[in-house]
Length: 252
Image (tube, rainbow, N blue to C red; front, side):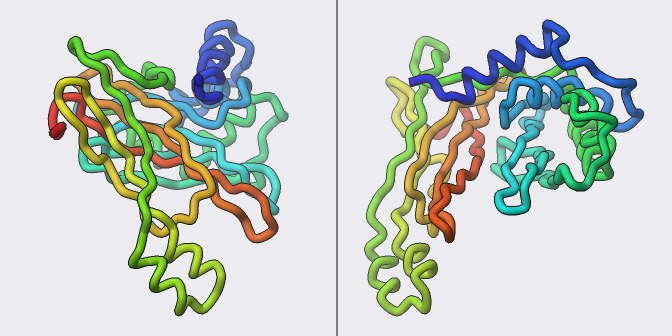
C-alpha cells in the first residue's frame, strides 16, 4: 500500500511546478527554501526534503500538530545520515509568527524569516546542502544495482522490561518499561540484512515505514518511519523519525 505521505509528495510537486502557491517578496534569510515550504503547506503535506549534501547530510522540514495548544510547529531538521545524528533540530509555532495573510506563501515566508529559519538556512549552507530542492519521498522496495532493498519494522518481546514493570510507580511508567523493542531492519537481496536502529521504551500502538529519500550523490538513503502512541485522553500521537542507511555496506 502506498503511504499517504508519498501521495502528498506528488501533490506538493504539482503545487510548486504549477505556481499554485504564490510567493511574496523573498526575505534575505531562508529565501531559498520558501517555495519548498510553501508547496508543502499548499499540498497539506507534513514532510519535505530540501536537499542533500555530498557528505551525507539531509535537510528536512516537517509540520507537527501542536495538540491542545492548537496550530502547528514547523520543524527545521538537519540530519547526518551517516552517523544518524541530528545536526540541527528546532521548531517554530504558528503563534510565533505574523504572516501578511494565511496564504501558504506568506506563512512560509514568515516561518523562514524567524531566527530558527535563518539559523537552519545557515547550517544548511555550512554543511553544503544542495539548495535546488531535494527528492520526493519514495516507497519501498528500492531497485539498486540489480538487487532489491526493503526496510521493515519488527517488534520483539521485552521480557526484562515486563518484569520491571511490576514495580512501576505509574501506569505510564509501566507501559514504557514493558514496551516491546522495535527494530528497523534493512534487507538487500543476495546480500543479507542489517539493523538500522532499535527503538526502546516507546509503547507504540502502531508503527509504519513511510518511505525514503535517496541521496543524489552516493548509495545512501534516509529512511522515514512513524510510531503512534496513545495520549492521556485517548488521542493518537504520531511521531516521525529517521534513520540513515547505506545501500552498499553492512548487510550480513
